[in-house]
Amino acid sequence: MNAFLDFINFEYTEDELIERIQDYLTYQAEAYKLLNEIGPNKAVKNIRPIRQQLDNEYSNYSRLEVLQVIKKDQNARKYYMWLRDVSTKTVGPLTSKNIDAFLGNMKNDAQIYFPDILK
Image (cartoon, rainbow, N blue to C red; front, side, top):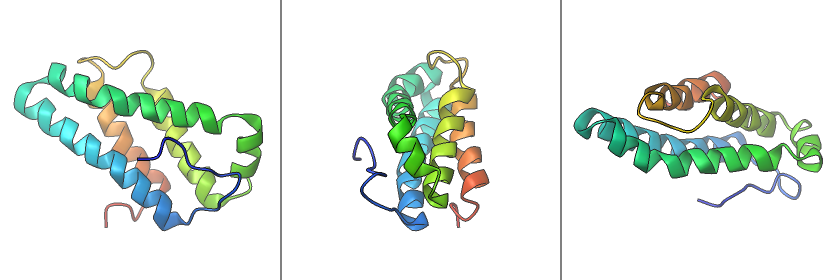
């Protein structure tokens, strides 16, 4: 997965952004599987890099020059709001105690901003 999308120079379709979120949700599903099969400690270890990627994307797109472009594009704005919600709802480091909520937020928030994502 590319580290960041280039919202300044490119306009992404809703389908492209849904595909990117689905990539994240693939990791989310794998972490849920680990969570259920071998416990939260192993799941946390595997999902932390994804959490870091989400946080880094959110931070990058929050820069003023990028955010100004995102605000003008409905699809980019929805993607940004998804990142914002996933990144900020779980405060602090990902732990065995909050991983279930974090994973649930990834999927639930995706469905809020992109209702057709799981069809």
